[in-house]
Structures are given as C-alpha cells and as structure tokens.
Image (cartoon, rainbow, N blue to C red):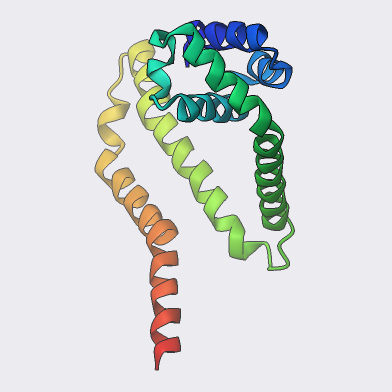
Length: 174
C-alpha cells in the first residue's frame, strides 16, 4: 500500500475524530504488522463502496464518512485479528510439540538444507572456483541429477501427503 493512501486516510481519521483508526493506520500499515492496517483500509473501502486503490480519488466528505463508519466497527476488527493471530500461534506451537520420533519429521528440513547446499555448491561456489582457478569443475557436476533429486523430494514432500490423504479417504469410504 502506498504511503500516499495511508497519509490521506490518517488525515481523514484525524478530521472526523476516529482515534482508533488513526492509531492503527499509523502503527500497522506496512511491515510485518501490515495485516491489521490492510484490514482497516479494506473496511474503509468497503464502507465507501470503492476499491482500496480508488480511495485517494474520493471526495473528502465521502472518505471521512467511511472512516467514521469504520471507527465504530474497529474494536470488532481488532478482536477478530487477535483471534486469528492466537489461532496461528496455537497451530505453530502444536507443530513444535510433536510426539512423534524425530526421524518422522526431520527428513524434510534435512533434505531442504541438503538441496540448498547442493545448489549453492553447483551454482555459486563451483563457478567462483572455476573463475579463480581457471578450471572446469562445473562441467563435472551434473545439474540434471540435482534437478531429479529436487523433483523426487518435492514429489515425496508435497505429493506424499496428498496420496496419504487420498488413501485414508478411500479406505474410509469402504
């Protein structure tokens, strides 16, 4: 979102006496906390009956009326956002608190790091070594094999869960 739109909305919130909307826009537009600011802007655009990108071209009176209308709903918006964040935190903590053996989940990050190292080695370190030493090491490192390994990992990691879910649904059906 542009800073122009944010400044227009903050100015409108100041004029109509909407301190909650003003504070949320000032603190939470952009950056990692931009989600709540985006929700406020979407709510203002919804009250105004326009797309968020069209807010700067609205007449000031209409914009101020939309901001004033959103001010009354802001506590519910913030409460909904807090509930959403609470649920996201709960899911992340549940992911960390696995009771399974470490090897049942550790293969995924291990393969990610391994493939990352292989591509760093082949696409960055080897060409630098070739340039410095005047050698042809890069020609000996097989890029198609690395792509095949990556495709297998992606298939197992992404497609394996899909096949597992299909098998569970298929067996539950009979």
